[in-house]
Amino acid sequence: MLEYDLIVAGGGIAGSTAAKFATRGGLKTLLVERRKTPRNKPCSGIQFGYFEKILGEKIPQDRLCNVELKKIKMILPDGKSVGSPFKMFNFMRKSFDHWLNILAQDSGAEFIDDIVCQSIEEQKDQILVNLVKPKEKKDMKFKAKYFIDATGLRPKIRSQLRPEDFSSDFEGATLNYYIDGEADLDQETLYQFWNLDWNNAMFAWIYKKTLDDRKDYWVIGTGCNDTNVNERQEKFYNHVKKEFNITGEIIKREGYKTSMNLHSKNRVWLGRNRILMAGDAAGLVDPTRGVGMDSAALSGRIAAKAILKAERKNKDVMKIYSKMMKDITTLTIRNQEREIGNTNNNEELQEYIEKTMLKQGLAMLLQLRLNKFRRAEKQRLLPP
Ligand SMILES: Cc1cc2nc3c(=O)[nH]c(=O)nc-3n(C[C@H](O)[C@H](O)[C@H](O)COP(=O)(O)OP(=O)(O)OC[C@H]3O[C@@H](n4cnc5c(N)ncnc54)[C@H](O)[C@@H]3O)c2cc1C
Image 1: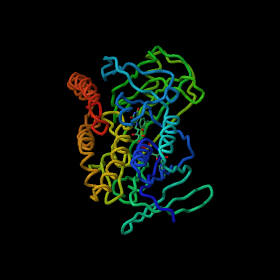
Image 2: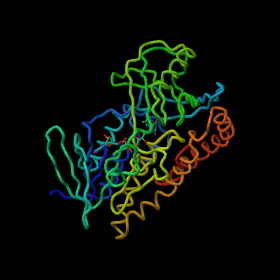
Image 3: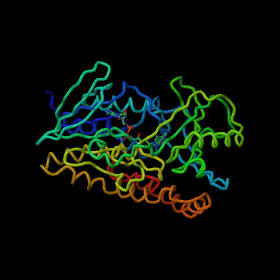
Image 4: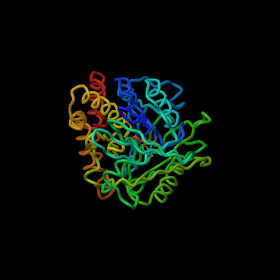
């Protein structure tokens, strides 16, 4: 049976980043991905400047969308809007995650796609990892000293270890329409529409995105923490269509739902023994900040570093990982407590945004500057 120092399940942001840094540190690492790559992933694919520092890489131009996002415009529940210049990375996850898979392999990690991590068995000094190649109906078992679950919002191993964190009814969903047409909107702006009728978890959105044909499309989408995403999306789409003279056909509908119990107090969980959770699997996606790729990459990088440190010092990896993750988990848990779903109506939401906006904006500018001087593992996730 093949043996590794580390097996990472999930070839997304967290898993690929963890595999790359672990291998660079000298660990014999296997990265497994359920889907055939490159694979699609429903995600807005927007990140802040410090993301490159966390990844430890400059993102090549050909992995980015044609349109660069340079501004944010917030449309408040009462219809008033506030805008500000703000540069962001804009990419499609298919091409981006494929690049991360390649970086992990270039560092020396073994990579197998089209293979499902089914379960693990905790043994005395090792973890037995059960994998299945569905098409070939072939089972495989590998052993590793450490294991990282980076399988996203429906994390396979976390659900094996902590079934109580999951609900049988789905708890959240998002839906995007890709429009091949015109709109009275600025294509370099990310539009955020704050209104509980359209999105009760964060904001509804419009921005431009490049598909595989390298053509640009308007993406109009929303999400929620209930089962009404279709209804909310239709309401939102009809509103913006009129408001911004959006013409053209919907050429693609893209939806996503999760069964992670998003309301759980224990949403953030970093793992146990030598089994580490990273990214969405650790519950780090943060609807209040509106993003999750930065915490996914950062937790992947920190997980790898924690394992390397534990090996070097012969210490408990979970203690090291939890300590190194403290700032991120504290921020995520604090934000969970003040999610916009906790406001009862649009008037309260309006008041909440107006009260916090200026402070948030200034803190954001300050932390962006300070991040330039902080090392990668100490990046402050934004908005603060
Ligand atoms: C609609 C939408 C829009 C978003 N927009 C943004 C945004 O603009 N900016 C931002 O920062 N974040 C955004 N997010 C959040 C972001 O997508 C996630 O936080 C991020 O992808 C988490 O990365 P991850 O590596 O933890 O998980 P993922 O990227 O989900 O990767 C998990 C990987 O594991 C694989 N996998 C799953 N099960 C198994 C298994 N059993 N065995 C092997 N492999 C498995 C999956 O196929 C996948 O490739 C958005 C999310 C959604 C749903």
